Amino acid sequence: MKSCSKCCKHFSSFMIQAWTLWKEDRALELIDSSMKECCLISEVMRCIHVSLLCVQQYPEDRPTMASVILMLGSKMDLVEPKEPGFFPKNVSFEANSFSNKCEMSTNNELTITSLDGR
Image (cartoon, rainbow, N blue to C red; front, side):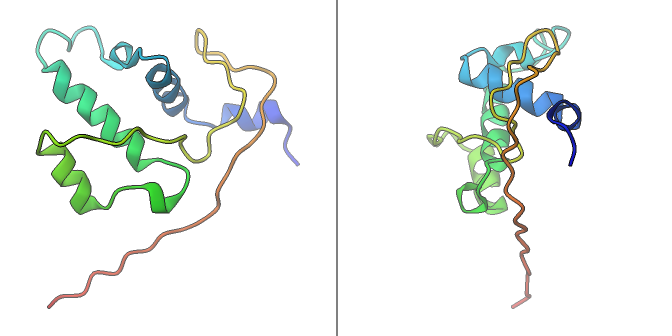
C-alpha cells in the first residue's frame, strides 16, 4: 500500500488549490494576473463554480451536460458545490505544499451515459 505522502503527490494540485481557495472565498486568486484585465471576472467565477459542481464526489450531485450548458449560458442561481471526489482529507494548501497528514477519500464509481437517437 502506498504511503500517504506518495498518494498526495498524485493529486491534481490545481483541484486542491481551486477547492481550497473556493472554500476560503479567495477563488479570484485562480485567475492568472495577465488575464484579469481582459476577462469578465463574473464569467470566470461562474466557470470556476460550475467546474467545481462537475467534480463533486458523488455522481448524483454532479450536473448533467445539459445542465452545465444551461448554467454557463444563463444567470440562474447555482447551488454551492460539495467536496470534490478524490480529494485528500486534512490537506493544507500553502505555497504549493501538502500537509504530511492526509487521509484518502475516494469514490471509485463510474458513470456511463448512453445516448440513443430518436
